[in-house]
Length: 230
Image (cartoon, rainbow, N blue to C red; front, side, top):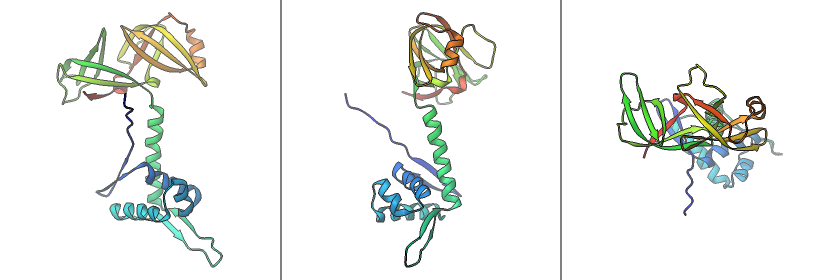
C-alpha cells in the first residue's frame, strides 16, 4: 500500500497581503533567530546561501515588510542578521501552530454518517455502529452524509461514573488495552464496537484503578471534535 504523507504550510496574513510559508522557509527563520547568521541558517536548512536570500526576498516583497535586520561587521567580520519585530511575530505564530499540532498529533478517527440535523440548536448527530455523537452543526452537512470525525486522544476523559458537566458526549465502555508511554498511559476503550483511545497521566490511571476488562465511562466535549466530509 502506498504511504501518503501531508506537508504543512503556514498562511501568513499581514495588512491584506498573504504568503504561504513552507517548512524550509520556516526552518530558515528558526535558524536565523538562533544563530543570527544567514550563512549558518542556510547550512542548517540544507539550502544554498543564494536560495536563503531568495526566500527572504520573496517573503518580504510579498508581505511588504522587512523580516531581517543585517548588521555588517568590520574587516575582521562580526556581522550578524536578526529577525525584525515582524519576523519574530511570524515565527511566533508558526510556532503556536506547531505546538497545537503536536499536542493533537494523534487522533481517534471515526467514519460516521449524519443521523440527524437540528438547525434550531445548531447541532447534529452522527452515528457509527452503536455510537451516536452530538457535535456542532456545519451548514454544508445534511442527513445521510458520510464524514470523518477526529477527536484527539488528550480530549477524551475517562470516568468511573457519568458526571454532570459541560461534557456533552458520555458513553459506557470497557478497557481493552493499556500501554505505558513515558509518563503517560494510552488506554483503548471499546465503546459499542468502536475503539476509542485516551492518553492519561500515570497518577490519573492509578486514581481510576484501571485494568483490562474494567468498565468505565468516557466523555468529550462536542467542540473538541473536528470533522471533514468524505
